[in-house]
Length: 144
Image (cartoon, rainbow, N blue to C red; front, side, top):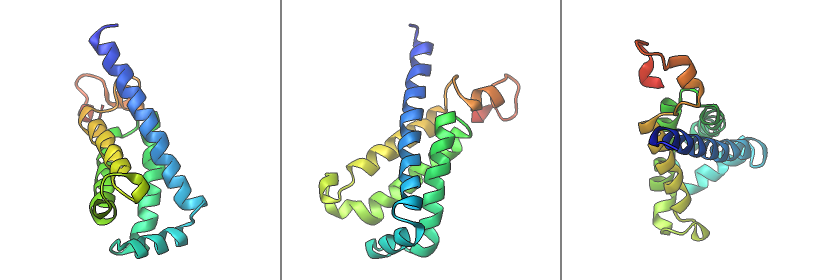
């Protein structure tokens, strides 16, 4: 495999796995915890404007995760998801230390890193972004 094929494969793997996990967390906020439960949980954790933030976060994680899986508007959704995870890190998890078993930030930091890498690198050649915006001369090529 040449470097380009390896990069395409790596970006696809990262995008699909991160997208699946983000979507799973969004789905969980809607269906297992419910939005009301997520709002209450966010309030208890000290998240500002928890009533407004909870449905936004749940929607971003679900829709953004699905978008990452298919590689649609990857840079945009990945940047938003990275900000979301950094907010979770600083607002909730940092005081608990590193390890997730203690409520720490290891998982949200990993999610933030994956999302930031995708925001910087883009979706790769095997994506809706490449198909829609990847033509040379396209004004939206920056999205590919």
